[in-house]
Image (cartoon, rainbow, N blue to C red; front, side, top):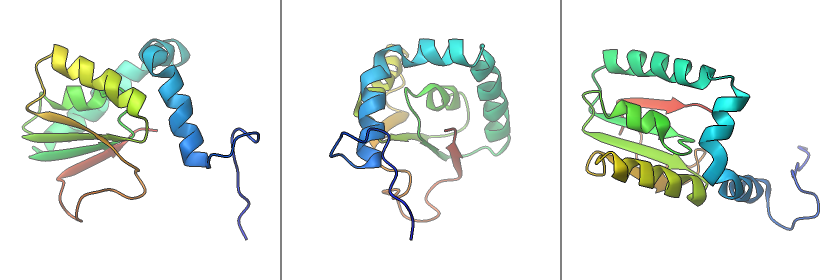
Length: 133
């Protein structure tokens, strides 16, 4: 029998809901926090992923746990015609949508609220799927 783990024991929300709520809370500061916490290495590994994905010449890409959409935005420079950023945090998606709009990429990138364990697309729909938790 698996043990139920809840980050905030005083909350009635389930674990996924608590995680989504936590990321909603920090979404406005996430990008800056990520750069500091990773000592800037996040930009380097994202470039490596971009190069790997670009070699596949995908038409469609799913970025699970997209957060504020940094990878999805980088993927706009590939051959992909459709890029989906999927995340459980609406706050993170909202920040990402603003970044996408600012770069005029709304016709290529869609930010979708969803759970990476229950992807709302049929099997074999995407040419490339990334997950960068």
